[in-house]
Length: 300
Ligand code: SF4
Image 1 (cartoon, helix red, strand yellow):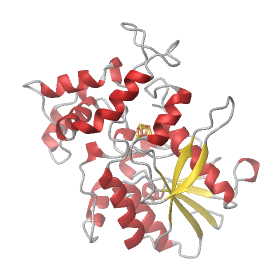
Image 2 (image 1 turned 180 degrees about the vertical axis):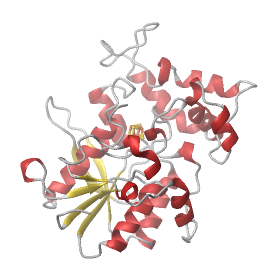
Image 3 (image 1 turned 120 degrees about the vertical axis):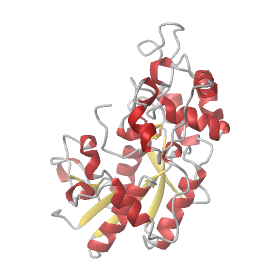
Image 4 (image 1 turned 90 degrees about the horizontal axis):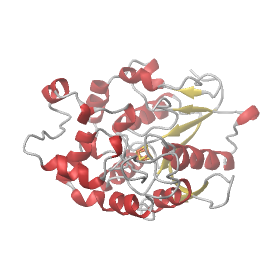
């Protein structure tokens, strides 16, 4: 499957990524495997708990918790620091620092995954002898399932990205079946995954977050206000001149307004009917609306 001894796994904190990581650890016990989890500071508390449980119960304590460190100098990339379950940021600190430098992330400036996950991961891997560029000496496994092949990177061969779940034909149902065998599980539904207020999620998912856990939007409302003018020259809402976070230049307050409408139907991943019959403006999404994986969704 891969021709080096070194394998990097980017664990996103979701079920798919967890199943992939477990399968790789089981299949390749002799490989030098580094598992990183990049914390943005905006994951749901249950995602962090799930990462800890996976690590302690099925990954043999191999997960390295990392966070991006923004260097506020021109032409200087992100740094990386190692944290753990206890010290991991929980109030969006890494994300906020990146916004301070790069402006609000949104559809036109979607580089938060790169800044807060890919770059810190690469920095950490380099310290462990996992080199890139001409000396690329490792493969990187990415948690994309066989029902999500449109999320695969076009540069997968030259950059040595591995999509084991695609190769093995693992679907969402397979992932759920595997997780149901474990003594623990992710307790939150899909709309709460990764950065809870992620701009790549559908408006329906975001409205459902607004209904279920409105406090999750406090951070997003704050940064929306504080950084609305930063780098807004070419990336702004024509009505106000401000840079916005959400689709169609919607604000957090507008998301709350939609969620309060009488005819609003909440997102429910178990409601197949909802998925089939409600595909409209509120349901536009990308794969990343479900999970934030490195080296995926490059066409967003
Ligand atoms: S979950 Fe969304 S907001 Fe968070 S890093 Fe990924 S793409 Fe960005």
